[in-house]
Length: 71
Image (tube, rainbow, N blue to C red; front, top):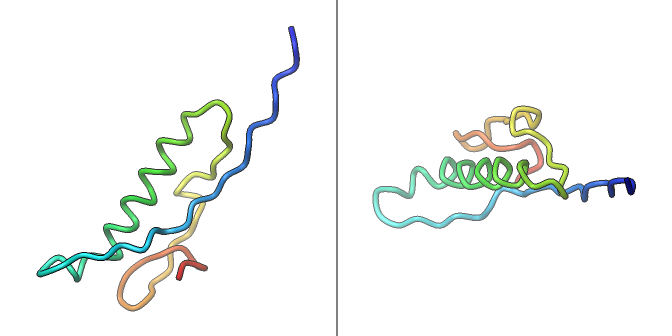
């Protein structure tokens, strides 16, 4: 049996989301939702190595929570 290839390591940045109207106050939360969804979908891919969202601590930024080095 041939050796398995090592998975590619990938990381996801929090997307820059723009909402309109009354939903503007939820831009950071929507961005985190997309970020978490990308991570959870790619974790199932056999050729990718992705950190769990739980292993990425979130910090308060401007009244919202985001990964430490997110813009």
